[in-house]
Length: 259
Ligand code: DGT
Ligand code: MG
Ligand code: MG
Ligand code: MG
Ligand code: MG
Image (cartoon, rainbow, N blue to C red; front, side, top):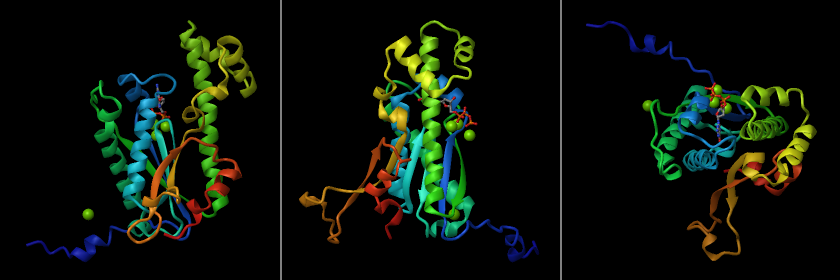
């Protein structure tokens, strides 16, 4: 007979609770996606199918976990912002992160065929890491999101130049040397002068990343009234500048609304 008391064993399961009244951001990132993207022959530098698959999984996350009020995605990562007073999983980091990561990973596998109908998923299957960080004010949260969008721009501009140089016959190390130390302006000129590409005309999803949020349906449409008389909402994916104030002014409900 085992005499160990359950309360005693249970006492080792203490949990890290996230600071109350702060914006929780769960950022997930594809594990070994350098290799995964090669093995599944993603287009370089951006594969629209892969990015739309990520976006579709983020929409599913937002529909499943109603405390997620905004998401921003680029490359193999997504940031999920939970409302400030969320009590999801009692604000225990491990619970919050693990359910979002596992739900996203399962969705990625379930939805794969819809975006890559001709390509089977290879072993090992895709997986994601995740972390939770608290941001104590709206300003700092917006600085965090701006940091991810700046990163998107810098990486995309570099990668666009890099792969244009490689596709035009340079080796990877020659392309790397060629771009070493160049400024944004020089990269922009290189694209125009050598390849006739105006960076601003590239798809917005590649340049700006993807913002996912609940938006009110057009209130003029009759079917937008839900059974409770409140206007129904849907999750939308947009590729817009979230660094500027204007986005947040146009969508004040995202970070403010009580729900
Ligand atoms: P990690 O996150 O430490 O497990 O390692 P990785 O390999 O996932 O590295 P990370 O997350 O820094 O970089 C993302 C990788 O995914 C990067 O090598 C490029 C690749 N990737 C993401 N999106 C695309 C795409 O649309 N097209 C292609 N060709 N590659 C992509
Ligand atoms: Mg990582
Ligand atoms: Mg990764
Ligand atoms: Mg990444
Ligand atoms: Mg359980």
